Length: 223
Image 1: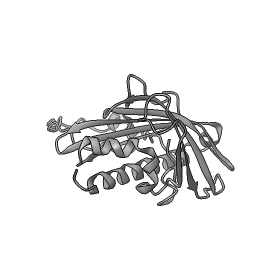
Image 2: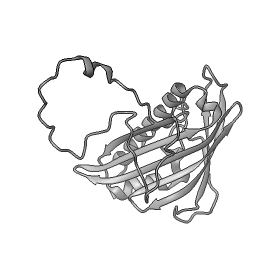
Image 3: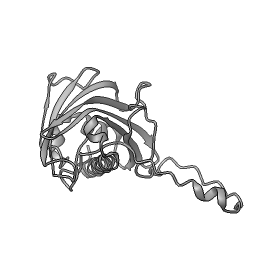
Image 4: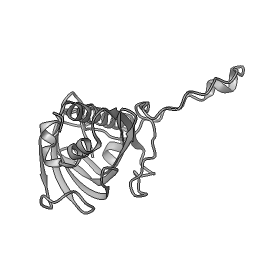
């Protein structure tokens, strides 16, 4: 799960997708000649907030959640390096600015279904909630080595609670690197009281996570 709101903390106070509908104009405008098809590509990034429908071992985010966000990056680094960064969760504070502390709750074995980790992130005040520190407990549900991850869990802070976050990551070799995709949803009465605000915070958190993963993976010394 993610959180944030300003460069460091706004990075994780949100996670799902903003879905904006711009449909009315087409019905009134004269038909335009069809555009030529775009050349196929495996490296184009999804528009921020685009619904991705990601799954890991057949399971995805919460389909009923109103707070959702998805995005992707082409990272020009080896798949094993990206996977190691993403799954060595105890090292998150060394490259993720929003992660203040983190601990594994199931020992140091490789991540697998049932693995858990607990981490904290400072959250600034918003028009709806006070400044606080969120404690996030993430439980791995699906893990496919160097392919995908899916975890779930709550986030609890003073004056701010997320009942359940569901977060999916996929890693696909592509021309020039690895296409990393992510999608997350949140549920809970508090965050659902202001869906646009929560979605904006979630999106900021996921975009920063992808940016920092890219920087860490592409900047690592060659093996």
